[in-house]
Length: 97
Image (cartoon, rainbow, N blue to C red):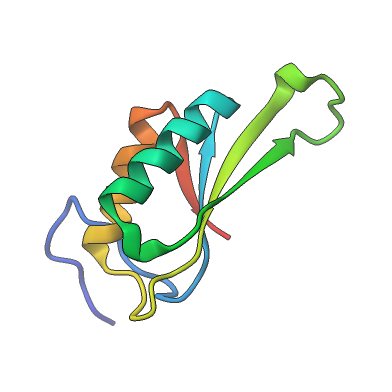
């Protein structure tokens, strides 16, 4: 088992798993997507997806996802940290998906 000696960098469970930035609304998702594309053009095209919460029909109860496919060489702790930081700046979080 390997240890991550840099406490502020996330561990990598699957270096080739899709990552999801879960954000509170469409504006936050669009802004995060634009910022991520500008900072990391090597990630390619990002998808925005509306994710209604289970059992809710109201648009106010929808989260938005920025779907990020893994880079060719897989995720690094530094790149995952950048995704975590970007999501947090837009009041969201990152999930492996």
